[in-house]
Length: 210
Image (cartoon, rainbow, N blue to C red; front, side):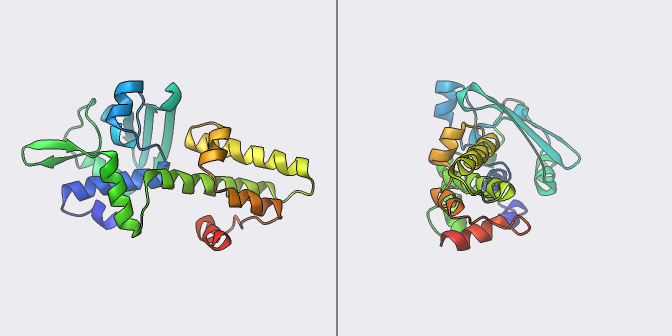
């Protein structure tokens, strides 16, 4: 995705931007239909008005699902370079657009999911990205708390991990647990197994859940 972000094909660059935004923020993919029906935005319906930047810091601020205002801030020099390469940013225009002849076309959810599947070499969607991020957040929080000896202490730890996951993904703890955390992480915690927060969490999860 990084090489595509710096490539010559504009559509590929925009898809790489979508990939990078998902990886950095794990926001919902969104759709024009959902925007029309509910007024909520996601990755594919972000407008330039929802994006601000300074130095290497990007801030996304938009109305998402359940009418919640999401504010996400992160550093990314490559994305900043892509942003400033545009001569103008019409505030109401979608961010993820590319030039096709004399027209500009928007990237949709199907385009993003197809790009993700190609990059992964197997079926993979924006929902899978959110689940991966949610699972990493939950596993990290459980490791920070550490194993507990009693059922009640473990339940409190899991509740704290679900609150942290919900905050990261912009939903509720119940939704986080039911849809965005691999339940095997919770089973491992019940057995006293947590990741090492001094190492990258994703590869460890791959080993533990294999």
